[in-house]
Image 1 (tube, each protein chain N blue to C red):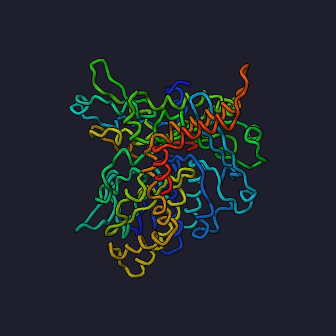
Image 2: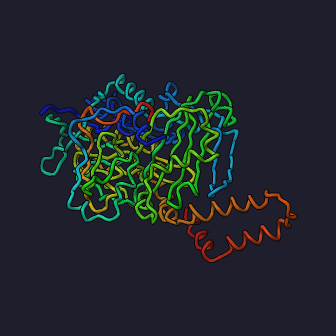
Image 3: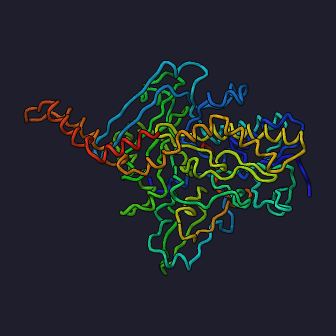
Length: 90
Length: 429
């Protein structure tokens, strides 16, 4: 089962604006890419220009990326009221 | 600014317990929950141990939407291609009140929130709190979007990431070594199949923990809990271990590989995954607890760093519930004196210290140091399983004498300085 298929099982209400912001200056100098390996939803990737991007829409709201990124690039907050993942089992 | 007596930020187990305990006190209590309903942002492995909380909240659990009561504890040490399982059963697990129940938080917290509302506290969903309102250093309310609400006391029950405690200046900076990532699938399976596969009676359940090759040497393990008509199957991985791993691989793939192991595959066969979820777990223990109160504010549950890895049991939800009750008792006393200053709210810390929570956190203060030992997750589970494999393996060669060869092998693996050191450290917990 692909990770995208797993995420498709979850109920999300997606905001128009992201709740995860990256500091490209920091990401640019990062070699380890902790976020890519730590995100359980596989939302981090490098785009064709080599910049780190994050797809906030499938966020499980665990906050792992914010802590795993020891360089402090990940500015993370909870999605605004009414948005984000809504677990039905939890 | 509208003002109430108490604002509880977060409608999880800690916040709801606090609200429940305050509901008949005559105070106006608001619980602000960021999800669509209580439980909709929460995740557990997981199970709730009932007996620790009964002295604090005795009467409400009869109607609770528990999944199954656990009568069987299973531990599996996984090698790369083999595994050794230890199964523990006790008649005492069948005595009421049952010691522990598996739960699913979206159901459980939702039920609890209804109970709290019936008793008279207000649970307001879809209300994310963005900031604290302070006056002369004292917390006097919260901001949610454009709305400001004042309160005599704010209870930060906003979970492990507690942005409120950060804003109050109480939280220590996040460090990967103080956290583990838990992620799981809920796999639907009919109740009879679950009972047959775990060999338990109707309504009974099992809890299984795994450690070894499945985490590829990283601190952590696997868990499997039986719900009424589903299984909660997942992994827990320490963030520091994840960050330090030499061969990089996306963490989510480990769960897929785990599911492919025959030990798991045959348990979940025919099941359908219905949800995928993730949550952080505190591994910091007592050394990483924040200051628990300030002028006008208290912290409870995960927000207060109340969680503990005891190796064979993982605790958190009981701490959340009981800390919520203790916070409520403190607030009632503070209300009687009309004093919500830090020195008045300090009573909360005293109550926590006297409770089983802080006693356990002191007792298990060294687990993190023990868990940092990679051999727990690599060498030992492999050695145990390889030893059993040698004993059980029969082929065209004549079998060797068990004692001579196997015990010699055991001696070689365990009677050395390294293991002695590990054992010495292990004695601390």
